[in-house]
Image (spheres, rainbow, N blue to C red):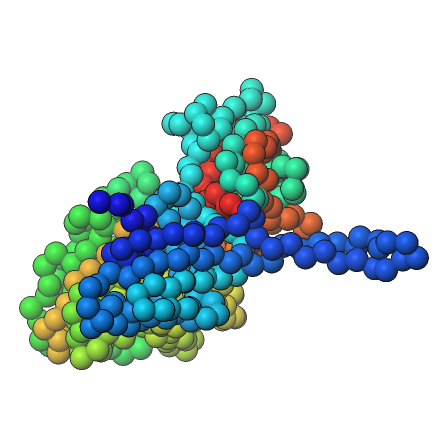
Length: 511
């Protein structure tokens, strides 16, 4: 029995409809168009461009009776009916995917016909993603060589026939203030080349991080204490429940059974440690945290609050996730401010899904199982709350010289709801004091363990989960990797001789 070449389109096996496939045409490369200018003799070449690519093949449909043939013909027409390019893969090139859509007349006569496809990009992409990292260095994908001065040379073997835009992940092993990436297609710089390792300057100090306290053990039980945010606006909250580390972070362990308050749950508190000068409190303060929110059923509700107060528990600001929707799936990110007129400053609606509805403008791209990074910053009177790539800021003059000295975490629910979030967790937390005047080894721009992710295709820089294109040095270019072997050189601050860890991912592209 003659084997029919397997051809899949949009994940469907088209060849299951065929008795035979012949005359497959995937011409060399795509189309090329040359622009010229007429001269007295011949023409002058100006430039050329690469166009789309056509792919076609002939087939004989399965079926003995006309009813079978017509049924298969209709089914085939339905399967190729698309308004956007989708994946076309041939069995003899299983690692090449062409993003294609039907083009022109699809001829058919009795039981045979031709299918014609257009590949707008004119190129194919590898099905798998190539990953070069520290563990497979020296293999077919390339070699990572760390030098004694802290720089790194990466030999990359792009086995495609076209350039490709990689994703580069750099994990700082030592404090660092600068990264420079150089290859034949461009130069990209991050940070500050001449940032010093240490001197007497206003600097930042990380005062606490759950990287060193994975189970939030330094937070203490605040059972029965007043919820500072709710109290500031006259709401009632019972805090006799219990929260603690469970599975991945702080979660509600035992809910409060009180019905006397509008809200109920559990609460922990944490007194911010003094800085290296022994001074407590931070007028200039930064907190980074990672939250996971996912309602597994419509109507599940809940509250998670990260609150900042002075030493007397007077509310300064707070970042929270609240879902009071008892029928649907709408939640809200809430930004609260204190001062002379405490209030809810902003409320931003989002779906409390797990980020799976990519076309929904309210899709949960902030707090799903794979993301979750957000932050809060106080610089004197300025309060900033991170949301989807930018920081929402407000000026509260009366808070300019009020230091943050305590953090409260509340997790709970509305008293009139008997359905609680399927997933509600504070997974990580970090706080930092800025502008500390002391001679000390500078907590440089990039801390040991901080991760820089460069998306060359989309022109994005992500630092520890936060969009940070403002870190790019003016004139930097997001660049591609050429086909074949090429070199990427990575430089750090001149005083940092400890090389970073490197991971580079890319898709191969073919004409």
